[in-house]
Image 1 (cartoon, one colour):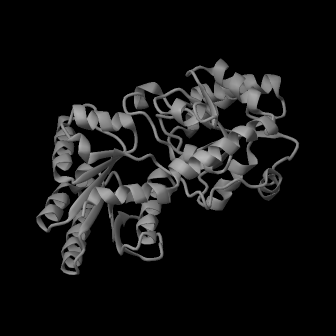
Image 2 (tube, rainbow, N blue to C red):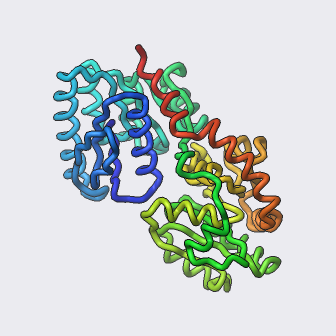
Length: 366
């Protein structure tokens, strides 16, 4: 497994990398994982660490590819034959080597470059090198086929997933107690990176409307990132600083699970200009569903099929008032938890990592 990912970050890329590696081990495969950051200590996985930050481009690429070349040659001599890689320009030469050594190559694509011709050309090359490609949304699959001329039979749509054994419905009262939160209040949660593509404006403006009708509501933002200063400024502007809790990064996954389980409603909102073209397949939504919590999400391709048609949540326009109305509607736990039950079923059927990994393996071929 080759992933130009920094495992020191508690984000969705780390979750995806670790869970797919675990899934391959569960399927009886020997796994070598090449990433940046500390060893994740996954049973059955040999870890080769590369160095360099996202901003240290030369060091990062050189270190990563040196490790990849070493492992590819050593393990090919040990009859390794499968190569799984997260699509990134930084590993193109290593993919060429992998093909020359006889590896069956599968790429995972969670996005496509929109403008930069150099990166687009590299993605075309990677598409030609791969025996199979995992696209996390149907929109990415369509772009790969239409714009990058990847044969349709190479591409399968498999969403980001959740560990359904770890994230599962639990006692709301017990989670509230472990977190030290007031059991008489109703909590709405967002978990994730505070990134520019997240539509915090709509979420915060919606919640300001919610507290006018439900003074017992509280919004918990679990995470951190570049947008935190802007978020804190907007919270003060809206006058809801007493009703909003910002936790910062939470590295303990059990604590993240408690924040989700303590909530009545979970939120997902993306900016159309950032994600409208490729759509989204958030790990956070899969984990909300696995934990049996009702979800309110802004309307992007895929959200309606995941939430509305399955009865697992509400999809709303990218506007504060409809989101506020949906949250208020679901702040009664009995009503929300009926949707959460549907969400749990969908998580087990569609979003369990073991299901996703089993559907990945045929892409390697015989």
